[in-house]
Image (spheres, rainbow, N blue to C red):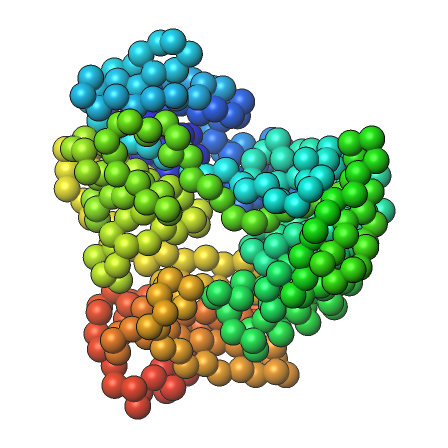
Length: 403
């Protein structure tokens, strides 16, 4: 049984079926959609792809795979002692259970944020609603310093809407990126025409008949717009575990390097998994698409009785407006405060490269700039090797170029 049909959950279902043609696989989602590509939602919002292209697995695929799919069904409780889950008054038994419910976006805390034209950006329906609003909008505001807020700002400006980007922090992704990297993103955003507002926050969404007409910032500035997108992080969907005895943290569901929770036969994967990484030797939660797929493959083996361990290095890559790119792998300073950093920057090429070390081990990196991805595989292999490097070698490692 799998609760959550995102990339982690559906990958697990697909892998289980590939290796076991006869077992029963039941897959639940509270959305009305089969698996869709969440990293294709920004291109959908930019009107670069169609809704049909975003769908990855249709209903017919589930039928052919003999996967019992339950759309628009929210699991309410997990009862491990009875090995059942409940939904809408019905009980569903399981032998092995995967929780891959991800997280829900946080609403903005300011007064008036429940206005009809204020949106989060996490699901297909969010994307379709924002896209419809942008058809008539003259101005839009993206709120937050996150990747989600960046994707909103990029979509707004690509749709020829006057775009403002408001964040409390001193730069985009300020917990992960230093000032120099932040300046490169700032340059890319302003080149595309985005109006940047740093170190400020919204104190009120001013509404007229339920529709927000402008926001009022702490600095006293008012910004009028017709579309407002909020990217302020996620709250993990752990409500169904209340009273189950399954251990959770502020980050999600606690699990080991086999993605198994404290209760045997119950697993977590994807965004919601607060898992132990045997390579980086720490516990963390990683909300990336590639990580979700890797989790799905590992957990499928273990639900079938295996003991596979997660031993991948999480990676993330994205365009940053028209003029920049970012590639991040492994850990970054936002995950622990004892990470040491070396970096190099080429202002003319708009390149930036940073490597992150912990106890003389390479544990992560961040590259910015088109054409500045060379050597990434060598860095990832170095992370996996757990080799220790003297500090005197760290700067020379920035020059690794062999893939």
